Length: 315
Length: 286
Image (cartoon, rainbow over all chains, first blue to last red; front, top):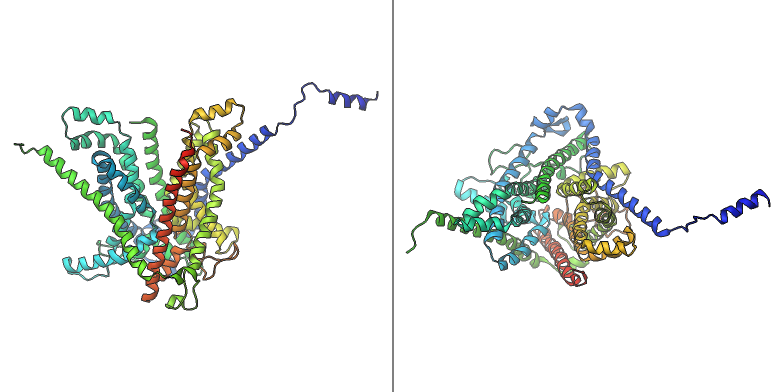
């Protein structure tokens, strides 16, 4: 026998020979592929931030942060990019929306968990879904058709001032209705998470139902309720189309609720057409998007951390 | 006789206040739908649904919004398909492959949750820069990618939640029969979570149809129904927006009708999701 033949024989009678197991190979491929996708998806936030930041670099190199954030002169043709009127506009609109929506939603959520009968809850659920499902452009249209004329009439009869109705107040009201379902649904989850025993103990001590809610349920649920409100309000903060349609879009900081405002998202949406024809304009608008992104990221991250802690620790 | 009691008065006050706000929220929902229906129905016609815009459509001449209806369906459908093909593996990975309390699962879930809250205009701006980076033009494809990014977190978390409901015993039973993790995932977990998956898909699809700010930069607008991925495409929300922007009452009334069509489409989808889930839930092993 030659050496070659011997080697061939050895190969054939290898004692621990295992057939290729395709199931295990698919398993390995599957697992690693999914791992990669999962990693990529959790990195998407970072990618969005970095890409926007990279596009903002040209304007950040020529203008200082202080000038961009606090200057109120907005003349893209002259190279002046002061975001202050838009930031103030967004702040006003969001604040009005929060003032209307947060108490209303919280009271509604408390009513639905603590007082209402089951029938009422099954009646309200589809309505909340309905509110959550209506697209923002339809909210905007509703605002233009109903809210704006009502505000105009209200200002004319009560305050004797004539305005167009396109105002901070109109945007605030439309946004408030838009974020009702977001705040209510998260608050409902938080409140139903509070153990029934706590309520029973309080009621057994002779407290009224409202006292129980005020001193036991709400105290226990406070972090979650705050987180729910923040989640809702940040949604109002970044909402674009509805606000664009009813806020009036005048690039001046508003001084009263009847003044028009020009919120940041509306600015971005309104000027996409000409943004490539003026130098630095695209960079400035994307900086607006970056500001929105960072603010929402910060508040949402905070709220989520609170909610996760509640879920983990329980009440 | 009952003595006047401050505690009871407070109770009564807050209870009525809460009832008022609840009724107010309910009325808002009904009021908005009522306004859209009343305004929309009166100007809705058969031609609007079956024709593309003819010359002078935005001046009040003939035509319809077929381009926008088909465009929206194509865009949202494509985006949902892209997002779905990424979401299912992620949801499976999070539920079958990671260990309990894995940092990767926590990180991914948190980051997806945070992404749900990012405004759609930011996705629009992101999609726009991505489009420029990739060298694309405003087109159906660019719009699909942008909307896919927008609905990915919603879809992913929806599927994740539905797969999470799979009883641990079922997974263990599958393992003990010698199935690998991928086999368990495809043949047990995914089937068990199918109703939830379907409802998540429909919800994401509805969100994709209704969103306007994200496609403003990326999908463009066109009066024709697109025939390829590289053509610009009209979407229903943007069609409404442009029609509302004109000073002509005929065109504006068409915008109301378009808004009615959009609302009906979205409500139909969410209703369908509920019905399907209820129907398919029979097959879920409890």
